[in-house]
Image (cartoon, rainbow, N blue to C red; front, side, top):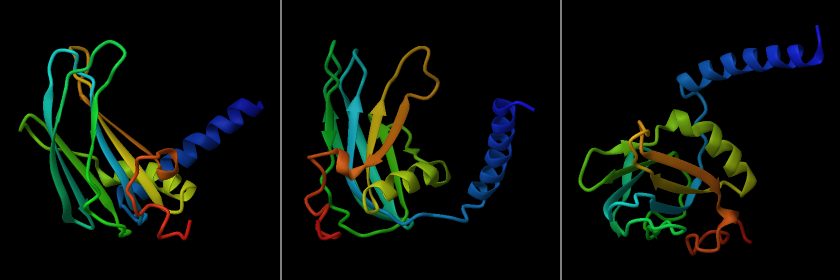
Length: 164
């Protein structure tokens, strides 16, 4: 068996085992949310975005943001006020556009990204919600999770809890 085939078989077995673990949500990493933003990639219209943050199944933030339409070379966005505080927990982010249906970033889907990014930045993550509508797009929502260290405009308390 060549090296590539061997590594490929390990990857398939590992992915199958990991999928089973995430299905039961056995590991739910506690983290702090140090930044939340929404961006509008729609070049045809401005939109109002509602954001909701839950920590351990309790709503800790709700806000609305009017975001202008995108133009060539410019994707406008808004930054949510950090009203949820520097409390570690299991976070879920919900977003909707123009009063439509709520879209939730499922915790089980977030688990691997949150764990990886939280480990990079003392347990603090930043979430970017991107609205990208289009005729060829089945789901216009794209959510990115990054380390808080990546941003200068994060919540004011980020770094204080770790003594930075």
